[in-house]
Image 1 (cartoon, rainbow over the protein chains, first blue to last red):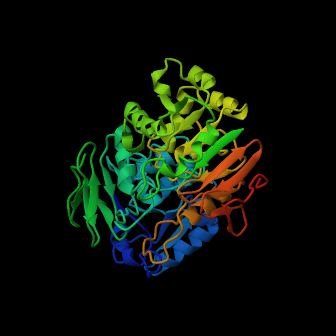
Image 2: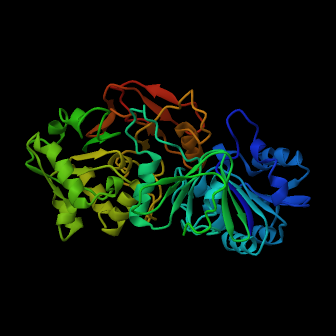
Length: 234
Length: 234
């Protein structure tokens, strides 16, 4: 299994995927074309708009993107793809579409069998056991919250530390994850923007410049440094 | 119909329900005891802990609270209650329990028939047409996202304005609501902390000191002042 699971597509002040461009060619080695899954449609843009936006970034490293919506058979498109990138947006919409188009089981199968996979934000969230640590609004009711389970954990993308100066009384991210753990047992990786998980064979490594925050049921959350092997987290 | 739908239970630097204590007696007129629905369990506290916490605030205005979990038949408890307060916490958990205990339809029925209702945060979110503008994590899979529909709109509690200085690239609340409107058509009221909607007969009025932000499908969001009659929003 080979994957890059990134917290975000875009860092502040940078272009789309800019900070990931140096590592993407190592994942999609020698591939001319990969499949793009635009189901999550950030801000409600169309599949076409989203695909053309993502394609512009991949052009810079000589890889062509083709949107899954361009195929009559989405399942077959996923099965035959040489590499797959799932972009961010709304996770409920992404998961809903993955089930409706029956892509979820195929996607799981091909990535476990070796098709290189990249996700950003919602595309990363679905690599965990469930989408239940998403930050997104439930704008559509998906068939299930269960996701790919490429890693035996859950991921919280765009992890945000509590603001010590805030007077806002809405729950912090940490409180929300604590609530998740009252009903669910898998560890959660809070992945800050600029961090990603690299999956190579059966190894899971934290990459990027920042620490990540690990939440385990009934334990005090802790920080891990970039480069840490997280394979045995669960 | 008589209801107070508050964005939050607690303002910064204040006690639980403190800012609402002056208006609660007007809602639960001459009632000695009301029913408390603690299903949303903030931070994962127990139903008992949550009920005793809320009861302490109501004690100050001479009203006794009884938790719905103390009754064998939750449906009957809702039907026979003289007044009902649903506390905040996780909206997915609240809605899941309301369906599982078959309380959702009864709650709708009795409030429409005149049982005074108060909600804070998640308890306010469920007064709208659906829970799909919640900020909470989907820690449990509810039977449906459909909620009470006491008002023909959706509510976003703890509405938070974008931070102009933020370098975080996660979606703003406004972007999330825009995504909601790509798939759903009802107006959304962004209710800031300290604001509430007052329902009297068929009138919906914005109360508290702050403005609220109104989001309508395909329109530019706009502000409304406290005191505004929002009955005709949809």
